Length: 323
Ligand SMILES: *[C@@H]1O[C@H](CO)[C@@H](O)[C@H](O)[C@H]1NC(C)=O
Image (cartoon, rainbow, N blue to C red; front, side, top):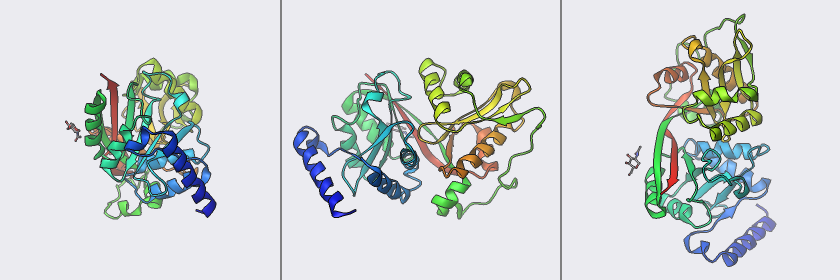
């Protein structure tokens, strides 16, 4: 950082300090502006993988065009303790839309994290919202905040997976103890006469919505439409020329929504789609990751077959509803 940036930073901090007397009691809130700060943040988060994976991935996409118009806020700079990534305030106008009202969090200090998240202007606890993090240790912090801020919380914990190409590049130490699967990381062949690899048309968002575990309502449908329109998707078109199997990314860059129509299951189609989708995303330089529920053995087997690296307990979502 040059001295000009440093001076600008100090000036900015002083202004925040003077202008927001309430916030200063708890901690400072610093929205990171400009490409240089955000690139520094990405580099710094990269050193804390895999604990920082969800925030790292989200910041990666902020730095590559920011298609979901998100912002990153830290408690101090450059030696931050806690990072929060979320939409701009003007994009969180629907109090019930927890798909949009989503906060990604990474923290090096849980005490600081609780104080920071509790500071008055950062999170609007009066809304239905989601908190997501690759750090299971945040559970206690969020349960404490639920008592202080009066909201109900539902915690979902899953296995986080990093694609092996991504792990090779970003966190090779995760691969050291790995034995590779007998498939060599490749899917079985599919009937190419019957199925065509394609990308998802937004007109089929309702199919994704119908089978998405977290979906099934109007707000999730809108969220899915936005995901289809924003990031690369992958699907197989069946004999009728319509999608029978698909995979989509969410706003954090996670491969988040995979599904197969019931009548086409148990043929390895989703493995094929996810494999090709992951290859395409890796070619674009995207970090590739996903999650699987502890009860979903079929998808765990699939992740093993494709040599995705499991990071237990590291996909966490807290759904918060004001009391
Ligand atoms: C999260 O915290 C709550 C409340 O303390 C507890 O009941 C729950 O078991 C915790 N979840 C996990 C996965 O540790």
